[in-house]
Length: 122
Length: 122
DNA sequence: GTCTCATATTCCCTTTTGGGAATATGTTTC
DNA sequence: GAAACATATTCCCAAAAGGGAATATGAGAC
Image 1 (cartoon, helix red, strand yellow):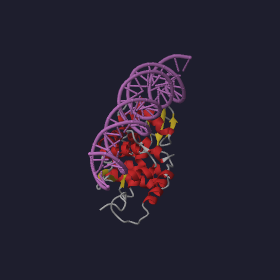
Image 2 (cartoon, rainbow over the protein chains, first blue to last red; image 1 turned 120 degrees about the vertical axis):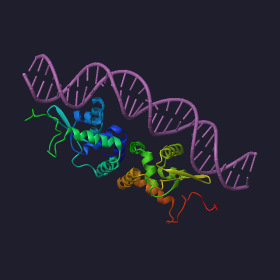
Image 3 (cartoon, helix red, strand yellow; image 1 turned 90 degrees about the horizontal axis):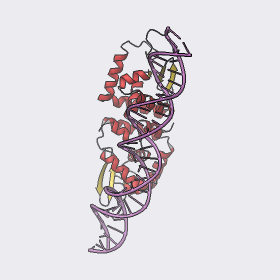
Image 4 (cartoon, rainbow over the protein chains, first blue to last red; image 1 turned 180 degrees about the vertical axis):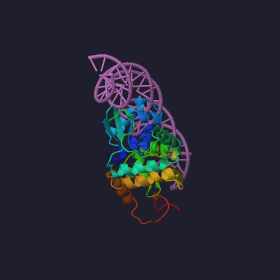
């Protein structure tokens, strides 16, 4: 993963927002739609873009695709993600995303998954 | 200066290299040409681009235009520039730029300007 | 198998981007 | 003034990017 490639991934607001939200934990596409308030194509395409370049991972879980930040990101990616989290703290757009995310999952650190599946799982 | 705008500026290699080199101190266009080994138009245009967005400052000094990082960058810019410096450390392209820069100005911290002007100044 | 839900992909269009050749501008030197 | 130098700008082009409508795929429920 080239450093320059990382920066190329970061030059789009939607992708920045996706990565920022992922800082809070794994999430599925439908939740991204709700959090970013953007159409499905847009979300899905940008996630594919990020995935192809190794900035996020995607794993199918039943009907849902769970996206997450890589478990062992390169130092460059790590640094840039940390920087993003830091810089986004005071930004209205990013803050709003986090607010919407909280509303989706009001439960405490209950753990795994993105909480997509209602009680019908397992 | 919007955070997203900063990221938009960082999605081009040439601009990344310019900003990275500027981490070493102010520089004029002709030296950028030598350091990056890129045509004048390219350098000049990208510097104009960065300048318009407040990522660099430019000041005329005689025949030369001296570009520099802003004296008081926003926290977001500061963080991202620091991150870039950090990440570039192990990158061949960025290292090569610094090597060429050193060759241009072998003198110690002699101080102001970019050293463009030969002994004919003052 | 059929229906439905969640997501991915294709196709097409518009806008933006980066690049270079040529030219213009501003500055010093003579 | 003219000439030389450093840099900026204009004009034009090819490639890429982002977006959406429609469609395809994959999975679970029945």
